[in-house]
Length: 222
Ligand SMILES: *Cc1c(COP(=O)(O)O)cnc(C)c1O
Image 1 (cartoon, helix red, strand yellow):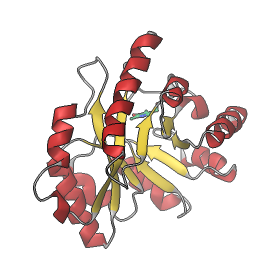
Image 2 (cartoon, rainbow, N blue to C red):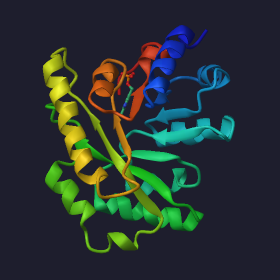
Image 3 (cartoon, rainbow, N blue to C red):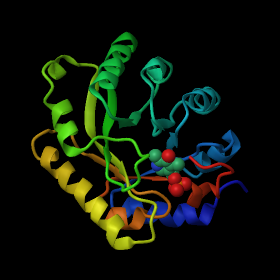
Image 4 (tube, rainbow, N blue to C red):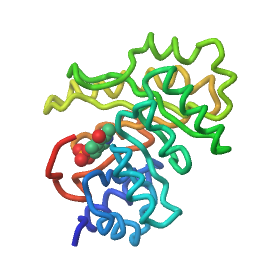
């Protein structure tokens, strides 16, 4: 058994009742593990590395919705543009433009989330509120017909301090609300991982990205 089926069923049921989408983060895990969850009905899977994603996508059923949740380099957009369901980590206008360009080539509109830096750690990618505002109000953004900003994504601090983590999620939610009320397609708030998804859901997450709770610990961290 490559996945924790009971955990999957419990988490899945709970999230389903709350209308929260579960993205099963399968990075570093074999396609056999993805297949096990697929057979239980899971369709949303998340990957961090472009090469690994295209490799797995080519081997798995075509009705899987693949989420790219890692840091995406502009020169790699073209490889995932033909099939990717949602790109979670967009953090520049330049990347948005490249996604639009590749979307146009594929005749697709590609959905993305803007990544916001909410954690205390320096290393995490993402925009602050001012940079987000700059991207969203860029002149010319209306011309990008093949990319669609669907909401925000963020990662809280890796910390046992629940007050801190909760505050970070609350901040992201408030930023999300600011745009959600004016933009009709801006409806996805991706926040919460194995260690903090319950807090994230309490604070208004609409999409959680869960890996190790479902698939067990990974051999290497990312
Ligand atoms: C790896 C990863 C996850 C899943 O992490 P777990 O702690 O294993 O649930 C979620 N989001 C991002 C962006 C990740 O890189």
